[in-house]
Length: 203
Image (cartoon, rainbow, N blue to C red; front, side, top):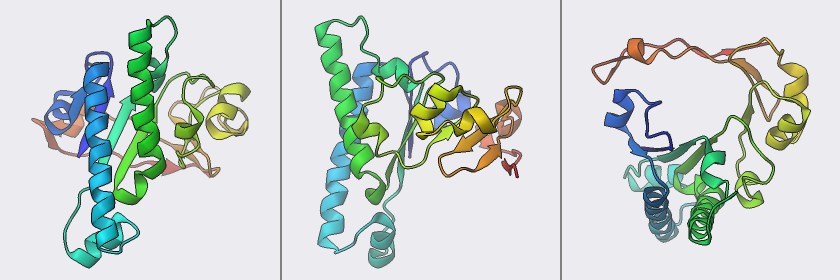
């Protein structure tokens, strides 16, 4: 189950994404969806405790049930969480969204509820520490020292990714990789997955 927040009306996502995923395009709908995910997290917490299981994988093996993993992705999260210039009511809404994200970031992995947060230009004040510190896998593209430090807690992206490298990324464990170009018109045929290239690791 994949839910994607995109505050450009979802226009960046090909038709197949809209058919297969839940596309969220406004803050109120986003808060409602995150609230449901937190409710599901609490439900799974009870199930795993009753079954004496530390995580979703153990639970699925032991019980024979298949609790599905759930993914919430946000395209351009800085646009969602930036409170600059907002009125009081809007700021309160964003604060509630931030709180739900913090809960999922802190507790979600064990229960199979995962976050993918993406932004083109991250500001140190946009994503709160409770969210950032609980995202254990981070990826950075071309960046200067400051941006690399915010994302990876190091300036490595500025040093290891050439300025002219397109689709080159660095993970927080030091792995440099080359992403593929994803042509949605070729990869999907009437909503059916066809073929894509593979990611390559750069030595």
